Image (cartoon, rainbow, N blue to C red; front, side, top):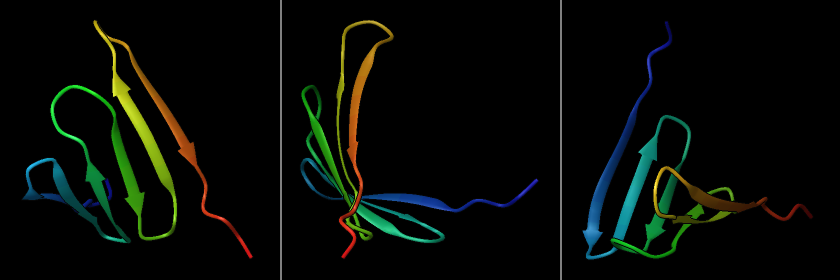
Length: 65
């Protein structure tokens, strides 16, 4: 079984720094409502928790030049 490393730190109210072995990202949004995640690689994700066991997520890949 591979070892994994993942940490999440609250920087400000509604802002988190997420770190894993290969990258880091910033997540904004607190409590209910949409959250936006911006990764070091340029990937952007928007997600919303919906009532019940449902959720919605949209990910946009980084632009390649």
